[in-house]
Amino acid sequence: MHVLPLNPIAVRLVQSGSTRPRHLLLRSGYLALMVLILLFALLGSGTTLRDLAQQGAKAFAVVSFGQVFLICILAPIFMGGAIAQESNQQTWDVMLTSPLSSLQIVMGNLFGRLFFVLALLISTFPLFAITQLFGGVPGSAIIESYAIAAFSALIMATIAITLSVTRTAGRRSVFVFYASIIIFLFATYAIDLALQVKVVIGSDAVSTTVMTPLNPFLTLNVLLNSNLYVPIDFAGTGHLWPVRLWFGSPVAAQLWFFGLGSIALILYSTLRVRLLGGALLGRTIGFTTGSSASSGRDARRVGSNPVAWRELHLRGQTPKLRLARWVFVAAAISVGLVIVLLSRAGTLNNDQTRLALVAVLGAEILVVILTALNLSATAVSREREDKSLDILLTTPIQPGQYISGKLWGLVQYLLPLIAVPCVTLAIAALYVVTGGFGNQADLMVMEDVRTIKVPTPLILPEAAIALPLVLFSFTALCVMIGLQWSVKSKGTIGSVVAATGVVIVIAGSVGLCGWASGNNIPYGGAVINAASPLNLVIAAVEPGQLIEYSLESPTGRRWSIIGGAVVASLLYWAIVYGLHASIKSNFMMTVRRLSGTA
Image (cartoon, rainbow, N blue to C red; front, side):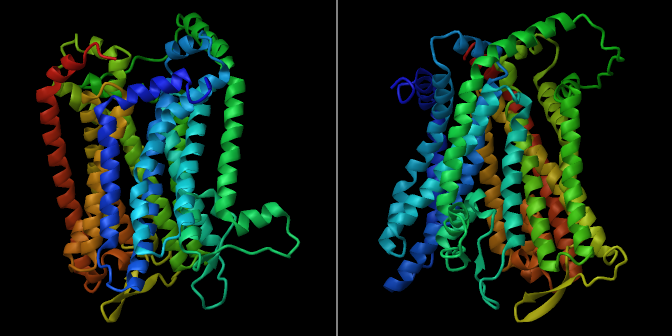
């Protein structure tokens, strides 16, 4: 009983989190968003029982995919606190000197934080039950969709706890945890699309691949669209049962794989957690004995804003961190270049090239946004926790200078990451403009516009000009929103969750408006889609999906996208300026109100 559910660490985490109004608002906002998704999915329901059943099944599919998407976004945010916590030596000193066993420490940290994710899942159960009123949704599908979401959250939670208790990551590595999850989901989805084989020639149905059980979105696709995404039946073929399970029952294979993987990580963490004491002592001794040695480097010049200088140089101070950052940048750009070269060589056709570019660019943009939110939402609350904010407030630095320094320091630090999707899209645009790098390849795709077919470039080159404008300004907006919540929040977890929720609402609203207007409002739809980085990328690579009515005139399409990017960039900077003024005016009152709080 003292391992679970009466684990003192789990009880402390649940009790402290459950009493915070922000957690209640988060659960309410999550439930409200799921209700809105269900209502939009139910619009246009027919009057016959067959129509109602079809609409109910469609609504269930939309809500299921939406729930897994939100869980994949929110679970790393909740569990990121476990990774950040391991950098606090005093926290581990207390736990390791207490009578708690190693298993209690691991299980308490795991399920104390995972509780809030599971609570979000349970809160939406009535919505799934409502879809059964329309028919067309078997009860087993509801249970299996919940199991996919819950086990996906479990494996992400155990990975975070393993990184925490083994001290193989630090506070600055939280964004690597986010990025790895996003890249993994996009990569497995893209590889699955490349490996798919038609079940019958001329049919739209495809078979599952080796990647299917590794991605929760793919297993949901098997569960909800089994007539189009068909598991391979190896019955009677002589294949071993793991192969039959992996390809024939991908949902069950994923649950077993995630479950056994989580148990293995828990056991490994339990065996390693007691080694923290020696590691902490070694690091402390190494720090104290090596502090007198001279580094041998020249002093760095501080710019006009010392806060911006500190924020920029504080986050990449070790060669290991700098190397990891630039390796990620080089690897991400190389992936885009490889896709273009494979297209030039004829290995990828136009449809496959577009699909691969959408997956890569989407992953890169999400990494930029989540990294910006994580860094900014912890920039002030972290200093409040380690008491360095108290020291900064005794200097002559004014609130406006402090906030603007944080903004520009973080934006400068994120510039290499911002450049990754911009360079990737620029390479693809250059490939189209130069006619396949001189290969004279057929890079035109016939898009259906109303009743005619319009030749459209493989990639809209003007998007390479528009994306840097929108992504840079939108990233600055994300940083400012993160700073706003970081100033108002007591801890890092609350500020990250709140800032991410606000950005999801903003990006989701703009994205849905662009999606709805792109194929209905000529040129105006292109302007609206250019306001969202993700929509802009999809419109550039798959214009027939978002801006169909803007493809008839290349000149009108081109200026609509560039003009929309310019207008959106100016609007985002205006919001950044307004948020800066608001934070500056309330900064001292907010800091004093939170001073001394835990």
